[in-house]
Image 1 (cartoon, rainbow, N blue to C red):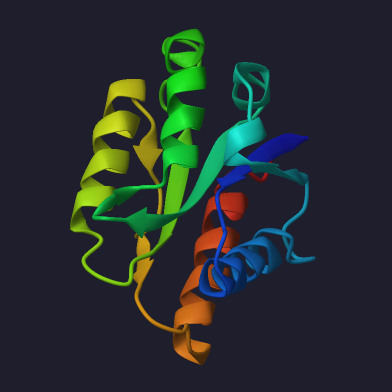
Image 2: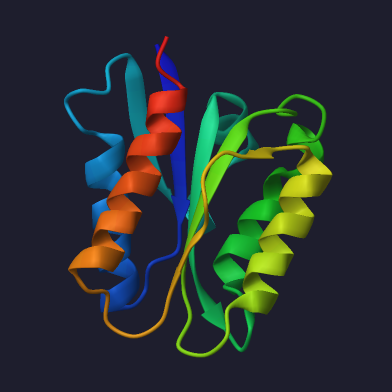
Length: 150
């Protein structure tokens, strides 16, 4: 069985809505053979990342950058996972009240260093997520999970 790890920091109601939609897509009953594991960014370990086959990353953009919690997660896992997780797929969902470009750039820089492969379009939202935006989140979760089906 493949494992999809969702590493998230979802402190706001809008981030939480996005997270729930991503989880719903990733756990769709039509996706078989994929275990979905959810870990708060502040509690994720290198072992969690090493045991996963793919990743979904969720964060708010704080002052144009990823949350300190997600940055802490990357700092914790970077070197222990650097060689062992190359080529694994990932997706990103991000809530930004103002421009999320810096946060996206940060995630892309870190995941490039890890040699993870962007496997779906990022979902970057501002304001309250509407039906269409939540569908994008659902699709992100489903897309990354489906890529791990064996």
